Structure formats: structure tokens, C-alpha cells
View 1 (cartoon, rainbow, N blue to C red):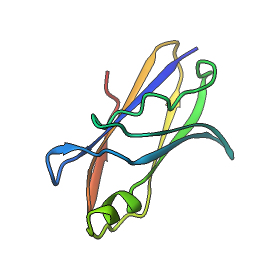
View 2 (cartoon, helix red, strand yellow):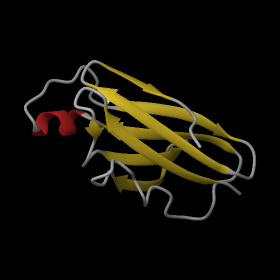
View 3 (cartoon, rainbow, N blue to C red):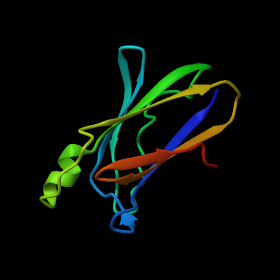
Length: 107
């Protein structure tokens, strides 16, 4: 079984994206939720048992994050689909700006 972590950085400001709500989903089921802390980390995203092999989705609700500072955002939410195959840790960071984003498999 595998574990998961995520981290959100606002590259337009050069700092962690505190307060972004994130859900972890498999199919139509929400299996975890969390909020990015002052470091942009979501410590409680995986609240249940370790992840079995399969396809999962992280949904980052970014529109409300940008609205807090009166900034526009092209993306109301960002969805990252990823595959869990091996018994190991998966880290899925999100680098964010109001009009673009990137993600990768971290360590």
C-alpha cells in the first residue's frame, strides 16, 4: 500500500499557497480532504488507509484562494490525475500562478 503528500506553491508571489482546499478522489468517491497550511503542505489529505494500486485525483480549489487577495484566476480548480502502482510514497506538488500551473511527481 502507498502513501501520498502534496504541496502547493504560488510561483507568482514566490511563497506557499496557504488556505487552498484540496480533495483526494478515486472515481466518484472523495477519500480525503485537507487545507494547505502556512507551508503550503496538506498534511491530512490521506485520512484513511494506505492507497491501493489505482488511479486517483487531487482537486485543488484555487479560485477562492486567489479571490482572497482580489486576484483573478483563469482556473477555478485544478485537477491532477495520477496512477499509484508500487508500494511507496507519492508526492504530487502543484506550482501555481493565476494563469498557469505545473505539477510533477516529487519525492
